Image 1 (cartoon, rainbow, N blue to C red):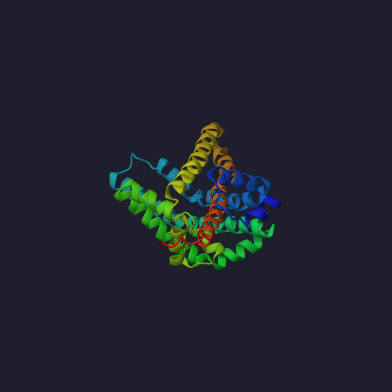
Image 2 (image 1 turned 90 degrees about the vertical axis):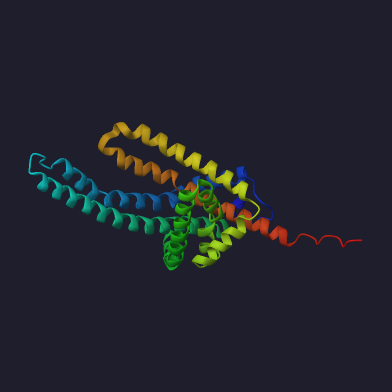
Amino acid sequence: MVLMFELSKLSHELSISEILSLTFNLYLSNFSIFFIPFFIANLLSALMNLPILTYIQEIEKIDYTAPPDVVLNKILNILLMLLVFGFIIAIISWIIGNVVSGIIIKSASDIIEKQKTSLGDSLNFVISKLPSLLGASLIVGILTVLGFLIFVIPGIIVVIMFYLVIPTIVIEEKRAYASLYRSKELVNKRWLKTFVLLLILTLIIGGLTFAVNLILTPLGIYTSLASSLITSIIAPIYPISSIFYYYSMRAKEESEKILPPPPPPF
């Protein structure tokens, strides 16, 4: 915990290897705090998907020897219900995802700055900031999708630019629009470094998730439960890393403020 306390008073910018090392150290030393929120969220997600699985099974039960108009009506009704349930689940999952990310970031920040945290307190705090989290998430999501549709590079730029949106909302208590500007301000002049860090995180999380799903496929009906469990273990890496990167960029910002003025011209 001494290392975490010193980090809150950091006076220099961290390297990518330092950020990753601190991320895993903090996670492993406080595993249950970061694992539980994601595990609960994944269990809720699995339960919410049950109606969709039920309607998918209904498609297999359709009597295709019946008149074409009867078969078509049944298929259309099932597809309509799938769309309705899919939309509702997507909205609920989006809200839960923002809450969980906020809880992880708030808890990590409390551990770093106060050497203690409470999931209940973190949840209450995040709920109070939920409008800002959802507003910022919606804006970032729309801009990211548009960026990738127009051309891949603009989408990547959006992801880099707004990597620190949630930490600025949680720690600095910025509102949605202000958090976007603040995140851009913090990653300024570190675009390549931010991209490399995000790429490494994507490879780590994506690689582990793919490998786990590949291994768990033979489990059949237990695959979903096992996958939720493993995903809950892997997922906290991303938000925790954003906290350390946030503090690192804050340290860079502060060091730039105290740089001596250039010598007067002769």
